[in-house]
Length: 151
Image 1 (spheres, rainbow, N blue to C red):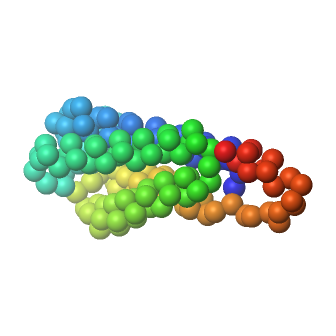
Image 2 (image 1 turned 135 degrees about the vertical axis):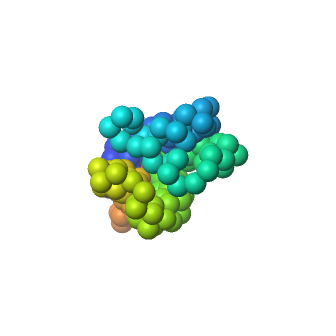
């Protein structure tokens, strides 16, 4: 995957992290009561147990941390940074999706379809980031130019 696509995926993940994380951190009760898009979808969080402000704020902080790492990697324009961020999103997103796949019974049918799709979005964006770019054979005359361009 080229740098442009990596940066696009990183910015999309950053936007996702800011949306979810910012809402959960700044307004945890509203997040709990109405996430993600009332009245079309949701609520997805409140049906899964009692309100816990500490837990909601921690999840918000986690999403914002992933968003910050995604933005930094996008600005760095380095494949190794995007690989690290992709792995971090996967470490979070896989168990998150697996949990929710096993707990769809309290959701309306549209939410039972929409929730897994929305949770899988971070996987669809993160998996390609985890694939390191192909290494080209080094040409001694142009190695320095390529190294500088990669920075």
